Length: 230
Image (cartoon, rainbow, N blue to C red; front, side, top):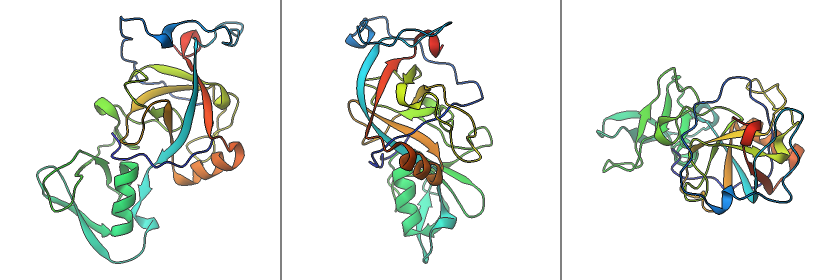
């Protein structure tokens, strides 16, 4: 889970190669989001997305790195037991609070673990090898170019959605190199992710800069994943 979501409005795109984590079951109660829309695109030859949900604000987030920050190591980070994890430059600590996941200079990856009564809050946990890019809501492993943070009052955690503007875009960096099919997974939440807003996990800040430069999107068109994103 992210502590804050950095509001850096623009655009993004990608298609990921691995399998998505299992989605949580959809709620039984019908909602306005489940209603068909006349302007939903026609399905492809084999499958198509579900109903259109509307225009959503698009922002990005990524893993921050201690190595990118200079200055004195003057800020101590803690786990939830208030045991010290590392003492880092304040600039990195601030970025870690915003992004939710950060890589220490010694190679450990820290993830937001909630507020705590320690000398510095929020507190963090050290991630294992199964979560190299961080964890989202419910301990979901974040997947570059696939995971999005959402407002759970608007979108359902664990459900797949289709972003029209991402379909057909090649994802940048070593984590990318593939053409995105538009499918994303609601894996995360964030303190500033409210209403019709998704925060796209770009893995690295450099990837965000490439996507922002290429797409320049302030918002995107979101659909239910439907048969296209099972």
